[in-house]
Structure formats: structure tokens, C-alpha cells
Amino acid sequence: MDWEGRLHAQGYRVTPQRALVLAAVNELAHATPEEILVRVQRQSPRVNLSTVYRTLEVLEGVGLVTHAHLGHGPPTYHSVDDNMHIHLVCRRCDGVESISESIARPFLEALDQQQGFATDIGHMAVHGVCRACREVPDGR
Image (cartoon, rainbow, N blue to C red):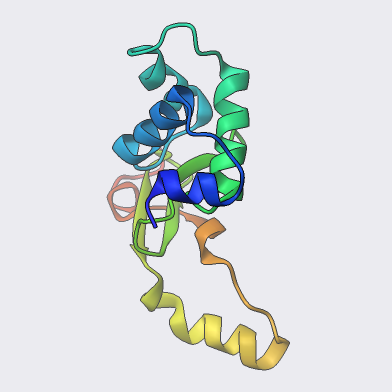
């Protein structure tokens, strides 16, 4: 089912703002609501941040986008159509790398078998220090 069909199936209208926000999420890959707003305002300057937040809530509710908390700031949104992945967040450079969920499969299966816990990796972020930052002394 296409994105318009998903909205209609759940009783939502297809609006220009929803189309612009979804397009921005898809183009930016991982973006905060503020970054999405900047992209949307290129085509529709009258859209405001509250519209972006409300639209993201609707799009997430119908399963078109999801979010992750990659740090202390606002959530980062990405398309659900992306391959499932885990976010590696560097605490030094704030870089974000996406890796396949398959790398964590043994851990996720152990959580399920031992704890009965089904993990939603769409929201998973692992914090640490990336390879590039590890190669540079702490003092930079």
C-alpha cells in the first residue's frame, strides 16, 4: 500500500503539508523536526514547527516514519521503509552511523528468549566513540 493509501486507510486526509514532511524525512534520512522544517519551508514558507510535529505524529501513527533519541536533543526521524538498523552515536563528534540490525541479532534473540522481551530496534541507539575519534587523542 502506498503512503496515501495508508493515510486514507486510517482515516487521515492527504494534505500538502503531510506530503512535504514525508518527502523531507525521506530526503534527509535522519533528521530532527527543526531540520525537517527548514527543508519543508523551502517549498512552503508558511509551515511552522508545530505543524511539523503534528504531522510527524500522524505519519508515525500510521507506520510511515519512526523516531529515535540519539542524544539529549530532539528526536531524529527516519522512514520506516528504510532497512531496519541500529544507530551508532559518537559522543565526541556527534556523528551517527547506521548499521544492520543483523549485527545485534544474537543479543536481540537472547533478550527475547531469556527475558521474553521483543526489541523495537527502530528506536535503538548505541552511544560510544566512533573509529575516527578513537584514532585522535582526547585533546584533539
